[in-house]
Length: 443
Image (cartoon, rainbow, N blue to C red; front, side, top):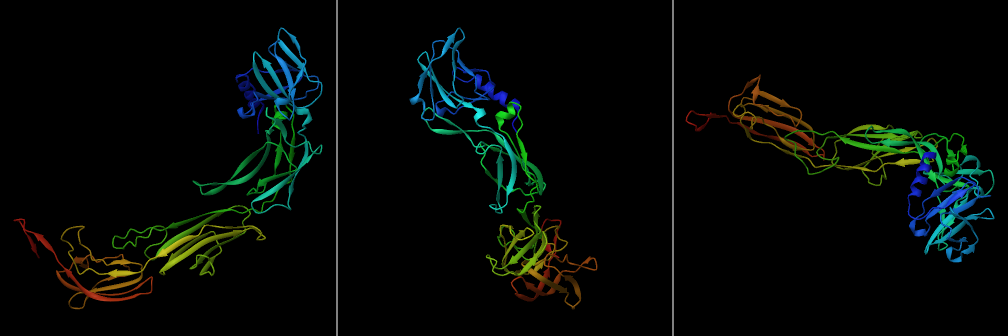
């Protein structure tokens, strides 16, 4: 809401603008800067023009007044003069333009009689008939019919403009905080340059009262015009959604070049929705169709953790609605691409020879969702069992490095694409020993 101090600042800034100022005797006045395109040097809003005298600081100035047709139709008027300048007393209460010719220069002004534009209003109510899920209307009940509309003024060419009366419509709503990932209460203040019988506003996201005050000129003069609506129960819904993929750092898992939410299965993703007050029904929807012609799964909660284990492209979205289903929200669609499977086995490694370099036997894989591997020595003794493709064999049995030689693996696995792997093969354990002479020998 504007304050008296803000308007005083406007008055002071006007006094420093180019061009001579008009002064008024007999009523309080608020000067308003005019856009250069209007040809006006200033607009003066007078509390009540009855009995007011307007003065210009030159006794030699020539005055004329004009109306909505512009300064070209100005009519000369008689003024009185004294040592302080020239003075004009307008005979009737009205809005009008003034042109003062002084020292070969034309100065143009517009004067508003605020008393003719009562800002009073009796009440404020919610119009429930014309609203939709995004916007609504408020009905303004004026004390005097037709008195709450805009104040028009005219450029020197007779073009109509609307004076910003600075009404303030205030109410509460919810605003999303990206950092905190939550909706917070905020107070909204909408500036209205004029009032109409019906005011369109964006629907608030929480229950609230609407308060109307103004105009800014009455507030500067210490007059209070205020009206409040009954408590409005919102039915507007909104949500913010997130999808967070659980990242893995397995050095033997192949990248499929897919960025975003998909990749090598299994892919674990947590889907989260933050909703506003009027939301009563929530649902995450999983589909293999981008148009959601059918659903694979539906989850009636705001947070869902799901593991994607099947090859293909999947789609997830969030839907929310109010109590009677009249307003709903549908999130952007999240696309998850699960790649084809692959499984490759190395045939040699050198445990204990050089730490961190080829000292562990691991498969290279992608989108493997079931995995079991058994490793045997030449006598058929099982020396290791792996239950996940990210696991590796360090070449030890019962805590000790096994001898160099040939070992055997047997693998049964299944890919996200349904491919079954029945694999077996040799593992050659090779150890290198650095001799004193610097040559490398196989041990």
